[in-house]
Image 1: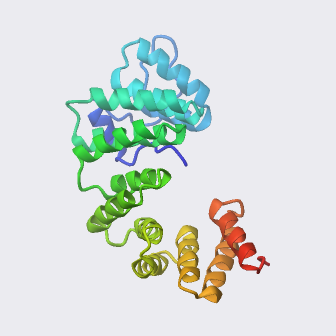
Image 2: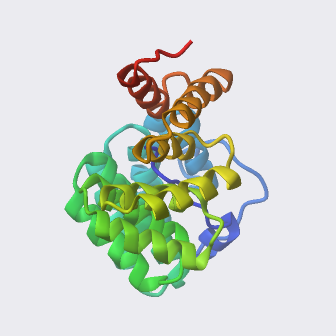
Image 3: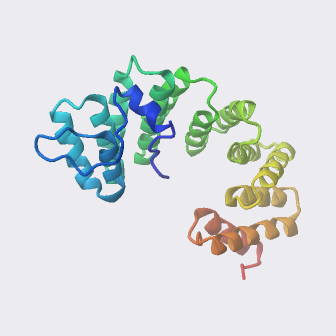
Length: 262
């Protein structure tokens, strides 16, 4: 799972952090020159270690929330996930005067980082905080549903994906995850209906095809299930995703069913 950077428009995030947008990306600050958020974030893509040094130097010079956010992004890029999550959490907790959209976004980044780091309790608390601020954001419900799936909390997954779909009925990822929850809760017909709709909305989505195959197998349509799993493997190879976990799962299911993939 990738750590989210930010989906808010850059100008909105800069405004929330109390910054003006620069006219163009600059080189890293030289001694005596002001630091710059866009430059710092740009370095996280190319040279995250330099971005971290830049952000910490800026933070020591009273860079405030912008420096802290860039530090968290740099730590994420370097794989220092516990520390990154703590920085995102610290920032979100302290942004009491920021727009709720911005604060919820950064709580979501904290939740994502805590989750990847394996601290599911803190991840849940961060997602809960984000949703308390932004209770109609489908992507936040989906993020919490994915976390609940890791915990095998299938009733919780069903509830959160239902909330996400109430806000965005065409969210294929939410339909796929709800299908998984319904399958695990012993409701094959609505699970298959969700999986079918997910595939109709996203015909090349590996997870949706994998789940529909599982549901087809569950109701006795083994030929349809095998067709879906073969399609997962074919699409994965065609799009350079042969090592995707969904492709590996499809292959395992085919092997178990007695028909290895070609």
